Length: 272
Length: 305
Image 1 (cartoon, rainbow over the protein chains, first blue to last red):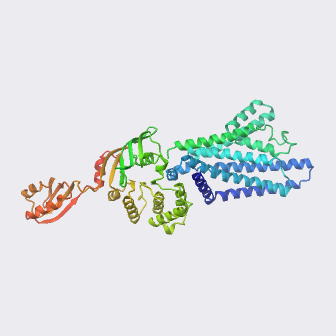
Image 2: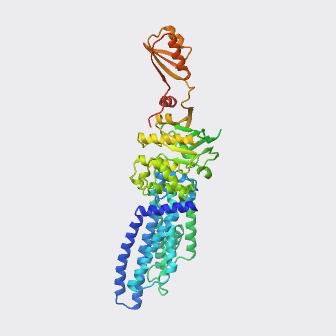
Image 3: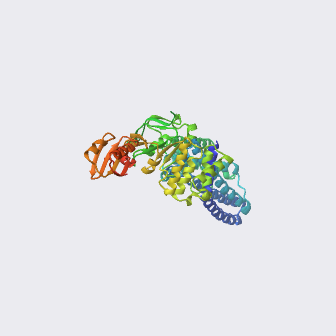
């Protein structure tokens, strides 16, 4: 455990020194600024109570969608070269020759990056909730359910990027990890469209894609929880036609654990 | 006799490429062992196998008495890779603290050790600077300090002086001498044959993934060539010298070259010539340089790497 903590600590120090944290924070602030301006205007709209609630719910969902997308990209790009890059540069030779199991290197890097990515997601989510509360007086429902789901989505995406780094070169890993998320994203849309136009095969395809790549299904479930009871399942916001079941959460958690185990296995086998 | 490294028929194949065909060697505790060969001969892959960075395709080996890869044995091994790279945003102190923790070292003991090593490699004044500002030589010296953090019993040095100036090379050489004096085995992979000759006790020559020769260096009982520059080289004198050695030749007037069985034969030759009343202008004993031996062992079928 000590070695895992040591490697995780180095990962955090590296991210800070390489100005990754600074760049991520600046992007987050830019997004939150734009979002806050939007929230102010949405709150001032002179419409009925129901229309206002719908507008603010839509506004918040769009904010969370953007925050979620940025956090997923952050979670993929952050560790994309952590194993492959250090293998290519030779840094890993010195590290792996130390009296430690290679699993400790993978777990340390995974934990360090996950901590950063989750902090980033929480910063963005907290910013959106704060802006909605202060600028529009709007408090969304189901935040307690939604944010942990988004955290799980981050864990899935980040773990795929770490596992790819144990197996592929940096560029290949980047393509695979982003492609993996894009697959989930398009699968989610196919599923929604299938429900919307009443084509069950499309829905089935979407569900199957979600089983292969479960990241986006966590976002869709989170979006479902973030809506007020009256809108849930109504399809009024076009995000809610097909809601993943709670079993999908267990599937995503299991998927993450399995992918992490694969990362350890692949890294143990890898010639350094 | 205790061995730091023992291997038997270690072999590594990457797909269809055979990197190491048969690595069978013994490195004694407390000796500096040179591992020589042309580029692509399998030297670095051999070191990686011994450090469990690469799994052998077949064969067996023991490092510090334990099977290759044993965690407790690795805690007593130091390693400076050929292209030493590290997270260059760290300072030398941060780098050494990080590596020290991976060896299980902590607190004051670790800081004292770091201080001592940075002083030894002459980097104490640059200890708080990020590695990205270091020269290649400085990186190699901090890498050497990293390899010695755990007071190892066996150190692998892969081209440890390739980026160093003459003063840096002298420093590394003196550190290797200290390690030998402390009973630490050093496995040295270097292309600088002069350096190997000056520091190593034994060397192995590896060619196309196979050890083709192994020998002890600087042995006083080894044959050597002696060039004699004398005033008169009569046939009687030349005949008389044959009792002291072989291969007697006269390449030019006033010069005799012969092969003596060992160093002790040289004063005997000189004494006998004086006794015969021959005026001696010069005596030049000359061993084969390691470069001569290297070229001889590798043969003419090797191309420059």
